[in-house]
Image (cartoon, rainbow, N blue to C red; front, side):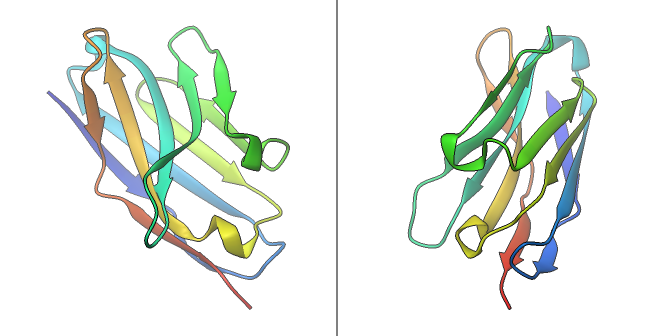
Amino acid sequence: QVQLAESGGGLVQPGGSLRLSCTASGNIPSIRATGWYRQAPGKERELVATITIGGITNYADSVKGRFTISGNMVTLTLQMNSLKPEDTAVYYCNAQTWSLKDYWGQGTQVIVSS
């Protein structure tokens, strides 16, 4: 079992920045990758960025050059710059195990609005 706890969401103006954090606990050695996903109202959950245990990162095209994922399998950070209204969503921390089981945090709301 893996437990994930997120923090750092909030309200920000367009063009602003936010940093999301996630801390994993439980069976840490079982984790092969962590990442961030988001779900906007009326839309499906989508990948934002992931990082593997080897440090390989992957980003959605919509956030490349604006968001940066960093950390490891215990502490994960998503630095979000140049935020746009379309980035408004609930952001979820994810951990995937070597058996390809997914664990999710409770989500943190990000609202980009003037």
